[in-house]
Every structure is written in C-alpha cells, then in structure tokens.
Image (spheres, rainbow, N blue to C red):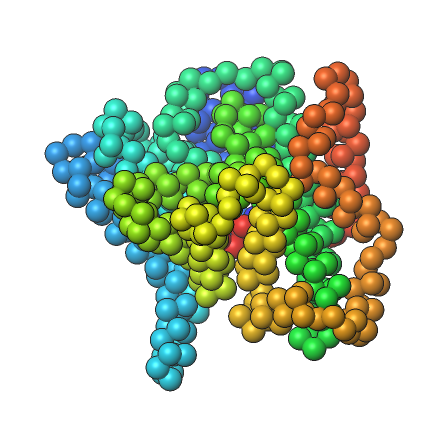
Length: 458
C-alpha cells in the first residue's frame, strides 16, 4: 500500500479514527481528514503531491468558471488540463514507444514515473466540473471541501470514483453512530480478507503460469492461470472497494457500491453493469451520452460503444494489451446489441453464464499479459495446448497444495451471492466472524505476504 500495510492498519487508520472521534465540529473533522489524506498520499509519492494539488486547484477554479459566466471555458480548461496531465504522466512513453515501433524511430522515452491514483483523481475532478456545468447549484465555493472530496484517503488512489454531489451534504453534515461504525469496520475487514486471504493466493498461481516460457504452458496450466487471475483481480479490486466503503462509513461517508457479483452476469452488457460500476457509470455519463448514446441510430450507437470501450481500455494502462481488452469487450457488447448473439436466449440461463465467463476470462488474459506475444501464447495453450507440457505442468502442480485448493473453492463460492443469502442475521455471529477474519489477516501480514493492490498502478 502507500504506507506499509502494517503501519496503515495498526497506526495510521486507528490514530486518524480516534482523532476524528475526539474532534468537535465538522470544520475540525474535515481539516483533520484533509491533513490525513495529504499525509497518506505523501508517504507514497511525496514528489507528486504538488501534482495532486495542482489538479485540485485547476478543477476548483474551473468549477467556479463553469458556475459563472464562462461555463464552457471552465469545462474546456478542466478537460484540457486533466487529460493533458494524464497524457504527459501516463501516456507519453506509450505514444513515443508506439511511434518508434511503427516508423523505426529511436525517440528517447521520458522515463516519467506514473503518479499513484492519477486516473482516479483526474476523473473525479472532471466529473465535478462537468456536473457544475450541468447544474450550477452543485458548485462549492470552498477550496477545502473540493480538496477533501478529491483527496479523501479511502478512495484516493484506487477508487471507487465518487461524484461530488453524492457526498457534498455529508461534507457539511454527517453523523456517526456505534452501529454505523461497526458496519464500516466489518466491511473493511471483509475487503482486507478478500485481498490477503483470497486474491494473493490466486495471484501466486497466476504469476507462476504467466512466468512460464511459451513452450512450457500446457492447457491445464493455461486455464488454471487464466481462471486464477480472473479471480485475483475481482477479489483484489472489489476488496479494495469494500475497504474504501468501510472506511468511508467509519467517518460518516456513504460511497456507492462498486461491484455487484459481476461473474454471475449472463451477458457482457450485464457484466459491465456489475463490474467497476463507478467507472462504467463515469464513461456512460461523461462520454457515451455526450457522444449521442443510442439516440442517433444503430451504427452511431455501435461506434459510440467502441469509442467508450477503447477509452476504458486505455484508462487502465498505457499498453496495447489494455486497449485490446477494452475493444474485446466492446466487440461483444455490439454483437449482443445488433442481434448477432442470441442475448434473449442467453439471459439468465446457464449457457449465458458460460458464454460471459468465457469472454471475460479470455479478456483478462489480454489484461494480465505483459506483451501481446505472451497473451497469444497463453490463449493458444488454452485452446490448442492438448499436450501436457510436463515442465510447466509440474511447476504449477507444485503450487496446488490443499490450502490453495480450499482457497480456490472459497473464491469460486464467494464470487457468487451464496454467502450473502446465508449470512446469519445475528450480529454476534457476524462480529465473531469478523474477528476470525481479522486474526487470519494479521497472521498473513506477519508472514510478509502482502502484495500491492492491482489498481494502484492505474
């Protein structure tokens, strides 16, 4: 994490929470959370704290312009400034490398390190200015409130993407209770457990498979690696979202859900209504609808969807792998919409689940692979690697311990709302379960097995 995980869990978060409870008045509480958020970001990349502040200053003043006599200028400056910062710090080397490869050039790369969370805080700032342009009553005249909104540490570096109008009232007026605090702590522990106990275990298997030489990847290893990565990224990112929602609740903020069991979807369109909801909603509201949405004919609708999915892939990273991942999902979204796929027959049926999971798993191979060549090797092994490829299979089988198999079974069960349906209503049982999970997480951390969240690099 930005802090070491132990310092964050046992020092930073408890201290900030205690000070928040001791503070009197929302002005003091907001100032405390603001300072804590800036300290949190500083520990990760102190050199880029001015960049975060510059982004907030830009969006604050653009918000004032958008609420005043120059609304279009405010939006234009916010878009140019925010996307410009993304272009320089995230995509410059990608563009230079692509030009070098395409035209045989030897242009030097910038070597600029990627600022943590730049995609998240850039999109939050843009959403604020555009919302002000659409409804001037949304504007905040307080720079401190806008800075707190964008930099609030639970969701600063890995989401979910929060809209200002969803929490502006809670910045000015919020209440905490023992019950709300308990719910927040349990949600936080749930998310931490997803990451430490499930995602990391799936990640070790996925890493082992994707580290194999192309000729050593057999069908068993390829499918196991692809499935484990599909589970890893879900429990990693949904786990962080749970932690952010839980921490927000501990401090009196209510963030919207970011995941809704996406692997239970029976179409790709449904998958994206359940996966990374804050991002898909952002692109719907601020790109798809402004492009015309589905109001300008079928061909234009399909084009708009491809544009959105291209942008979605590029948002995730400066690599053609991510772009192809986005376009892969865009292709099936369009095929479903134009009737090339029997969506009505698939929806809600086992065949729909199989189809959707197959598309998603193949897509995540593109997402995980370091290069297109590696993605091709894994996909080839998945669908044509009938040989056992014993060297690779042996390396994978060595990791298939009883503990891994139990964790894999738990991951498959927990990716569906099965546990949600059977969770006991007795608070005593849920509290006891939370304590057990926390103890297991502490043991896991003591073993030094923590890995950074996948979405920290976006």
